[in-house]
Length: 106
Length: 113
Image (cartoon, rainbow over all chains, first blue to last red; front, side):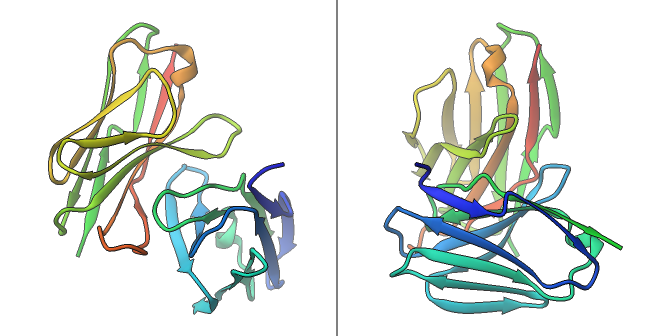
């Protein structure tokens, strides 16, 4: 069993839809990153959170450390949100999920 | 503000040739530095991390090595590349304070032919 499970693996949406990506992990950690990887390969760290909820623009991330579960939400999705979203438990030496490929169509 | 530079962006090398990828960080001192690799169709994997000059920890046995000759310089090397070394290599940094988030470079796409 993988240490990090993301669902769904692939996701297509129409512009404007509300998106949810889920992440469950089995390792004991104090924080978790959500990363965004664009087709060119570059990776941007969207959030690092250790409890509760964080919001940045249209992106919201939640985490329940006790239940070892985190979610990433995108409100009012847009084609430019199309990317691979990666859940990565850990603070610096991260363990990576295989990612969720999101495509948002106009 | 802090920035991370990684080069080259793409590289095609023959099997058996040497490798040197360089990463530098500006705007901070004594950062933790990391090399990650993403093989085709697979997730990211931590290769090396460093908490200071000359201090390198290897996470997985492999054909690669890392060095940190200066505080903000991290180099990934190989004496003889293998086909299996192909992949996308990412350098990252974080502040040395525990719980600091990671910041990634733009990556190097290496193809070994």
